Length: 166
Image 1 (cartoon, rainbow, N blue to C red):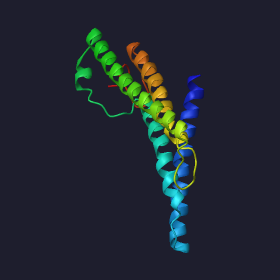
Image 2: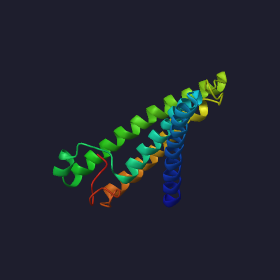
Image 3: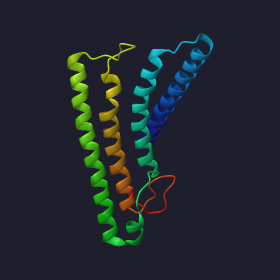
Image 4: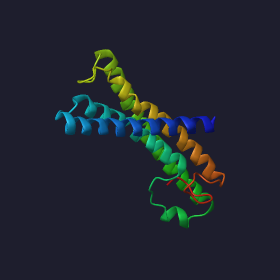
């Protein structure tokens, strides 16, 4: 399951990045050759960037590549190190829970009101769904990385043996 989830995360992030790049390029060409800016391109880029940001955060957690203040954790050993790892993980989970709650409230509000994007008239909740979905993935990956760290396993491609997510 981990491999499948990793493939989905990476694939969606690559698709989002390719979409943003392609749309920006088309808009530049339109402005250069047609002397006209395509209004919907900004809407697409901003909304897809929300998905890309959430997916990037999740991938960063999974790979252990988020910046962090690790001096204290590097100096600690044993139970003290485990306690710090758990506290940092709990703080991250609380953050994602708050973000998920806010995201679900926004999605529900947009569904109830029928809010659509201004230029393309797409349902806005499709883009706002990035917050609760990204938060759920973030919580899952935080738990996964914390368990690996507490077991003394590597937490990602850019981490050393036993390093926690902080």
